[in-house]
Amino acid sequence: MYDILVISSMKNLMCYCSRIVVTCEHNAKGENLIMTPLSVKICSPAQEFPILEKQNWLIHLHYIRKDYEACKAVIKEQLQETQGLCEYAIYVQALIFRLEGNIQESLELFQTCAVLSPQCADNLKQVARSLFLLGKHKAAIEVYNEAAKLNQKDWEICHNLGVCYIYLKQFDKAHDQLHNALHLNRHDLTYIMLGKIHLLQGDLDKAIEIYKKAVEFSPENTELLTTLGLLYLQLGIYQKAFEHLGNALTYDPTNYKAILAAGSMMQTHGDFDVALTKYRVVACAVPESPPLWNNIGMCFFGKKKYVAAISCLKRANYLAPFDWKILYNLGLVHLTMQQYASAFHFVSAAINLQPKMGELFMLLAVALTNLEDPENARRAYAEAARLDRCNPLVNLNYAVLLYNQGERKGALAQFQEMEKKVRLLKDSPSLEFDAEMVEMAQKLGAALQVGEALVWTKPVKDTKSKHRSASASKAASLQQPLGSNQALGQAMSSAAAYRKLPSGAGGTAQPIKPPSLPLEPEPATGAQPTEAPAQIRETQE
Image 1 (cartoon, helix red, strand yellow):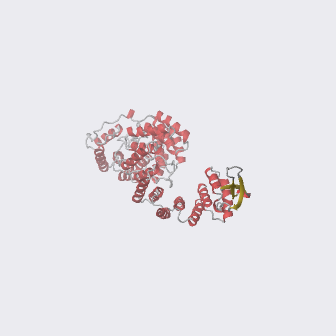
Image 2 (cartoon, rainbow, N blue to C red; image 1 turned 90 degrees about the horizontal axis):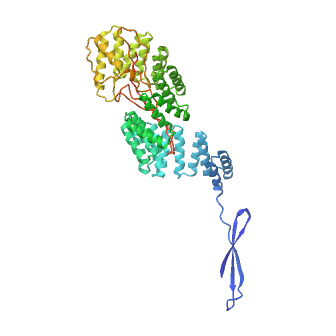
Image 3 (cartoon, rainbow, N blue to C red; image 1 turned 90 degrees about the vertical axis):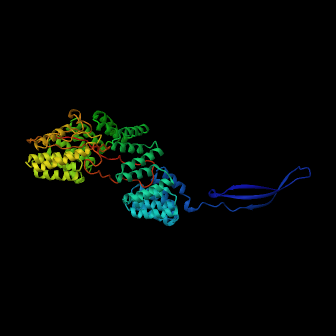
């Protein structure tokens, strides 16, 4: 007896199976075989796909093709057929709403998915992400903790918890969560967030260690290489900075962040033409970059093309009106061009944005002195001396002003304070005192009858070859009996950090903005280059 399966095509593409049982008769010799049907058994139809999920494949296909209009049409039809109970359709619609910027609507839909499937950790993760995008970080943390109960080995949950704690400035908890994420699964983005925690806390050494580990794990990640190069640049370790920035450009020759940083280094060392060549490449990629136009402007300033410098800086100011470094540079250029009212305007705006930087008050005092407002100039100098504990030029300028006003006692006190700062700074290997500053200090010392043998032990740099970075300026001088009212101008570069003074010099540490962090791990992030000013010594006669 043989079983023969017969498949017949039925309506609506449903297949029914009929089993025909036949017997085979034969004679003794095995000849004349006869097949006789004994019975026919009709099997039940094959089970259909559940109606709630039958269009999921089509929804998924349209979504991954980014054909969102067709996807929404299918979703609408599917939800009408299922009376709003198709979880996948609701989930994809919420994703589309989020991409369109409708965060609140996407949150409500993800919450519906969480109700339909309360044991699904992915739904809770999406609810938490929507809360994060709405700025509700505490609520997002609560939802992530609920999701962690469902899946304790999900590194994304730990990573995102760490990001939420960063925004709440609970850095210890953020540090623990990010380390848990690395323990579960090492990922580039987790290293980046961990490094940013140390940068926010002002610990550059630990940040460098984290980024070094990240580069060992992912040696071809250009963002990690660029960030590590910028950190070395900020510490003045130029060889390693060039090495990592060069590696970043090797893997991605069009990486504008690395090109901008390399151009800033060249600009720092006075190679303005080479730096401008680099900036032309960056301008093709990001023509609306405020740091780019700031650095281009200070290149022209170093070449003494002041009108072009002001034009570029004002474009940078238009693109980033609340960047105090650009306002600082505008004030510096206007002081150089003897446009004291404009300098006062821009320096005052910079002080409103950065009220704890002593050098800004010093530049303000120079402008006020030239505007013949000595009383307010004294107040500005006093505030600059209070805020800046390391820059000797602040006290030198203040002493010159007091001496020219006939206050020898106050001038002597400021002169002695300047000498104390010089003694603290003279051991710095990268520090060079400006020749004009030394000359003015010697004249003032002689006038105050404190002797001409000052504490200057470092070789001074020649003023004819002192263009070491983004600017070299000489502002208009006051025709005072003693000479000129000196002022320290620092060209602020937004692409890299270059400090000529030790840590703490030049005012308080720069506040680092909270990073705009993607919550979920993504292949590439749009983090901005590390903003840290390149501080350059300048004098103004």
